[in-house]
Image (cartoon, rainbow, N blue to C red; front, top):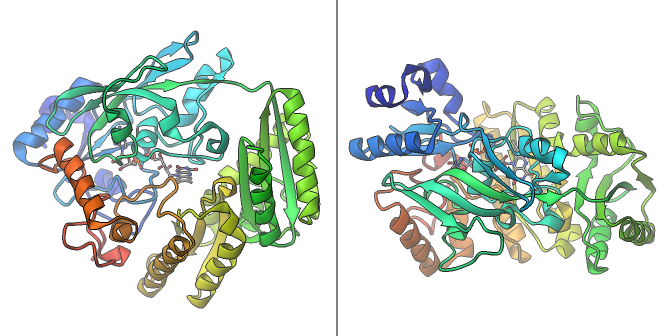
Length: 473
Ligand SMILES: Cc1cc2nc3c(=O)[nH]c(=O)nc-3n(C[C@H](O)[C@H](O)[C@H](O)COP(=O)(O)OP(=O)(O)OC[C@H]3O[C@@H](n4cnc5c(N)ncnc54)[C@H](O)[C@@H]3O)c2cc1C
């Protein structure tokens, strides 16, 4: 602590119990571990100094953005510190001609689009947490968002980055020139590495032009199966909307009772929210085809947003859905498995059965176009038995999704939550290769230890979430 204060001054080192408790978990509240201190650097060089001090003293360190991660990635190791990047929030360069921006990692996702909006540009990846989460966290998680269906996830929008490596060296990865590509793609390796290979301190990202025309449609269904079959049919017809999202009746009820109220139909069992963007003629043609598909599969209502305010209200409901569920119970567990979208009608009722059998409160809101499910289980973390049942539901949902050809995570990462499941999708050789990559970047494993990869020798065993490192005893 003295060393941190010497480097950053008292103001930018937190050590009081009341300050540190705010860092004991991220948005997955299953795991808790209080850091011994929190460092708040403002420059790459300060991050470098803090990292060098940690290496000298043998103290583990974990980078953190806004702490909205949903897999326990920003939780410190026992005896470790947190390096919070939120004070590094400057937009350093907006290069309108080349449609690029260079930003510090603590820039909040939505602030970048607001800042470049006056130039008719935007930063495309839009996690639902975008008014809070940071671009550094987005890079570390390779985050997605409703509009990533057409525009691609974070990796498609990051050209280059500056990183402080676990030994304190500064490295530039990728090429800041759009279209530049030479040598091994170390940028790609760092992206999505969940803060285990380096600390990102500067990011060069692409900006996209605002579309000429945007249309938002809301289709109402009396079964989730019909809603999901419309999703497969839209994609199979060769249409890629900019967003294609689904909400079930319980999510609708939670949203409509909250400050995120969007005016969703109260009698719907499911709604599909679609956004189309592009040239006006193309948008009009796609809208006609999508409306025909909705009618074919038996939509009971199709509504188009009347104007930009109406469209914004519909999106506010979708993006505020997790927040709205805060009304239902003190804690929320968000699963993030993925299935082939054609399997959605089969998988969703089975997830409902799993939660019914375990007596759990489920609500679904998800990136339907990508088959990226978000079963949300509302529960009370103070009730140990209920936590056990939530953990069991998570395990069964993963088994189910993998059994139909799905994947462990769409966008929330592995963190602490899913490392015990990695052996279900990766062979021992795959995991060994990943461990070697990590060891090449992070040989002493002082940077964010114990995340993503299972502990060697333990991968055959799926440990309940609350027994994994960092979990409360
Ligand atoms: C309401 C809600 C809605 C969400 N919606 C979405 C969504 O639509 N799509 C989606 O993908 N995710 C979503 N998330 C998850 C989360 O917001 C994202 O994972 C986000 O990218 C995390 O950013 P953060 O700044 O909060 O990072 P943190 O939670 O602070 O950290 C996440 C990980 O990144 C690492 N990290 C942070 N900063 C750096 C850095 N500068 N260098 C290296 N590593 C770093 C941390 O160590 C940790 O492993 C949602 C979360 C919530 C609570």
